[in-house]
Image (cartoon, rainbow, N blue to C red; front, side, top):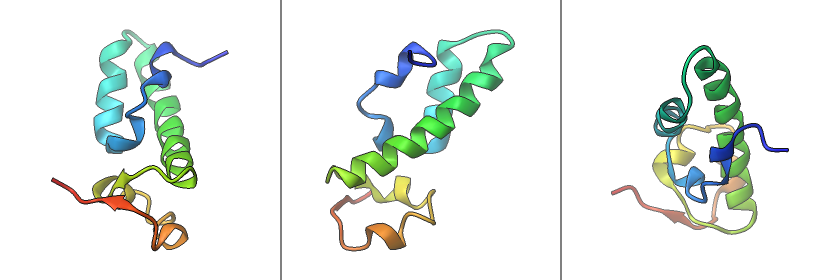
Length: 82
């Protein structure tokens, strides 16, 4: 069972953490916003890692938010920031 319905968005790894948190917070309301955003940021990290693992292009500005990932993915394809 998925934590909330918006996790199926295929462009998660193209968004920064802030962009994705904003996207999620607009989809939920009330006291659940904080919990949903916290879960979404964990999901975002997993999606960025999975995207790279499967060879998808993740924008550099997204990778820069995950400094611990940069050394692991040196040499893999990245999409330049716009």
